[in-house]
Image (cartoon, rainbow, N blue to C red; front, side, top):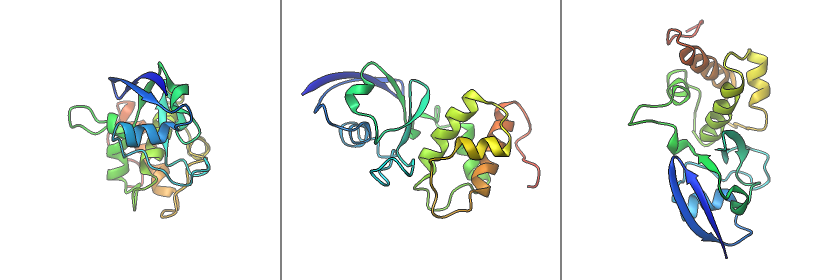
Length: 163
């Protein structure tokens, strides 16, 4: 066993973990944060995406011990005092989800994208979300949700052109 110290959603955690424990399993099993989904177990789908030190990572490809000392944000950590993060609200408002399985990973990948590029083009959004698969949608409303959130976060009105 190896002791790790991580901050998850702003709260410190010290736990003993097996050195081979994947971050996704640590979050789900040790911390009970089941919003981080296990989709493919091969790093192809992106359902397990979380922010590690502000950057989107597929938590099925990161060992929990590699996150030692890090700051992790999961989908559960985005809302503040019951108020949805603008991306969470945008996905709801623009119907950017259907079954919802891919949504946490999509949203966290989009948080990373918008932190690096607050006003991305549609092409840049599609590129930024590569590696996140959705089996339900045609991605159009997902892209629309990211555009909507970017506009809202930039201080614009809440409506997206074409609504």
